[in-house]
Length: 185
Ligand SMILES: Cc1cc2nc3c(=O)[nH]c(=O)nc-3n(C[C@H](O)[C@H](O)[C@H](O)COP(=O)(O)OP(=O)(O)OC[C@H]3O[C@@H](n4cnc5c(N)ncnc54)[C@H](O)[C@@H]3O)c2cc1C
Image (cartoon, rainbow, N blue to C red; front, side, top):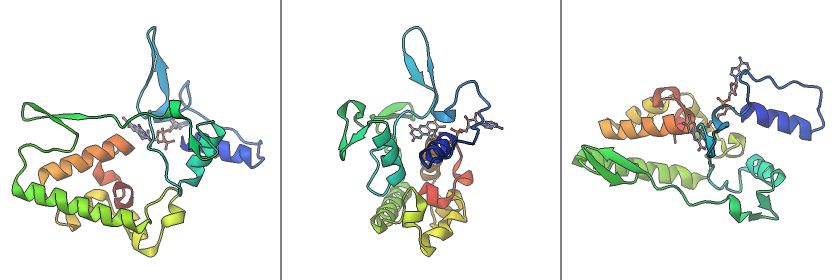
């Protein structure tokens, strides 16, 4: 998406003298798809949350693609958030955030983390593109890993760290040690 988006922007700005190089047979990277005799299917990325008002470039792309028309979402491109389940200690639980077998300390850390994230979200500084929301306070968060930030917040629960690592792998294909604190948050 990074390369394709760059080409899309260049093209829209009237630049045509460039080459987009792709190592694979098909472009798209993590968001490319495959097809078999039954159906088309994604290899990895296959949905995006409805972008907020500050996601100006994503909204512009969706307008170009006909997904967003005059401020209205084209309904056939919308779907409900998938409901995920987690298999933990031999049991299925609803939702992907671990909820069974937690200690009081695990619960306390999940709650503290949730409160912190709500606080960060309320600042409106965590945006894509970053430039719209970035300030000195959040720039620091791009200088350390998410795992280090969790440690600095005294989040030592094994299950909290497992879940945050899972989220980074799911969203970025990288561990929480290789994801910036800004991106993790
Ligand atoms: C399992 C999984 C599920 C995900 N699900 C979602 C999702 O549902 N929604 C979402 O928004 N995000 C999702 N993501 C995240 C999303 O896939 C990535 O953030 C996004 O695809 C990253 O795009 P990119 O262009 O930076 O990198 P990539 O998608 O990795 O693209 C890099 C491209 O560069 C090419 N390349 C590499 N080296 C060279 C070279 N030397 N020469 C030429 N070409 C080269 C690669 O072949 C590839 O096409 C998911 C990630 C994973 C791992």
